[in-house]
Length: 252
Image 1: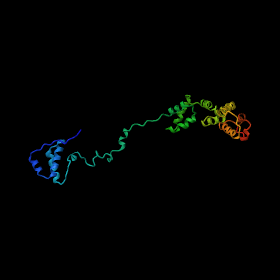
Image 2: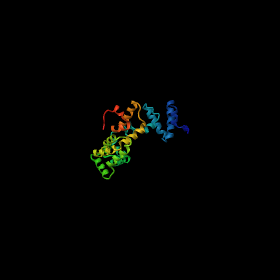
Image 3: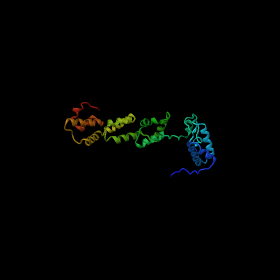
Image 4: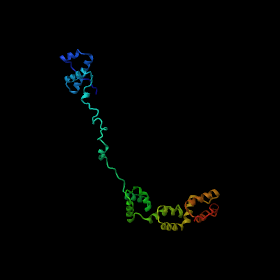
């Protein structure tokens, strides 16, 4: 939309005659006052008198409306940040409440749904979320009493998942790392040793499939089975008599 300056009819009054006789700058100021009066609805006489008084004082105010709506510099409406009474503490109650994370019980159940965990494992993983001393122990006691935590199930799970790839020694080490009791670890290792040869031969066939023909290949196969935790007595049966050339000691 194009804005146009409104048409101001000429007035044949004595005041206009006097203003016409004044200087060109005064004539321009009077015309501006008429325009402002048309826009704001103010009286022309009031604005003219205001302009004349300012001119008499030596002040050239081109836009008198600026003083009508101006505020002091120190006004609180213009400078709210400088007011010491406006602090962040007054608005702290308007902050949204922070959401708390899951409880210790929910965290423990979430871990148990992924796989079987022993009690020492849960203690290590949930200790950082404990807010009060002894709170975690009460939660784990309740879950253990209800059957959610079971050492027997942890042993069975580890043996089922790892026995097809590892020897009895490596499986026993993983059970110890999970905090399983020594009696349960010894029982699981003794049971795995009864099938150690069959499992070692299956692992060797899947990895290599044929007997080594040179010293480099023999050493590679030997290191692989040792890293999987199979005993030396089993290595003799799987690889042959050349084991003595690379492993002159018994690690049972």
